Length: 121
Image 1 (tube, rainbow, N blue to C red):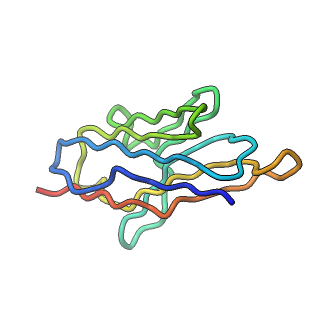
Image 2 (image 1 turned 180 degrees about the vertical axis):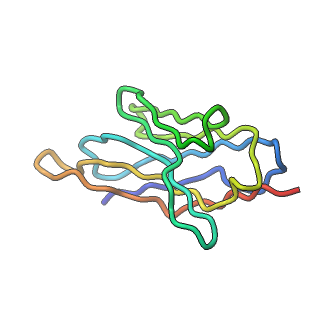
C-alpha cells in the first residue's frame, strides 16, 4: 500500500514563506513525475508545479519566480518552497505521484490527503 502524506502547511502573512514536504512510503518500485496541486474554495483543483526524476520542472504562471519544487529521489520525497506568498495562494495543497508499486505493475496516480495553506494578515 502506498501513502503520500503532506506536511508544512499553515497560516502565514502576505509576503511570508512556507515549505511543504511530501514523502511517499509503502510498496514502491519506481516513481515517475511528482507534483503539487492546489484547490481553493469554489475552484477546480489546479496543477501548481511538477518535477521529473531527472529534475525537469513545470510551474503554473502565477507561481513562477516565487515557488520552487524539488525532490529527493533517495527519500521518495517532493518539496515545495513557497516564497512571497499572496492571499490568492490560499488553498488546500495536495501532492501527487505517478508511480509503480511493483515491477510488473502499471503506472498509477497517488494523492496525499492535502494540507491547508492560508495567506492572510
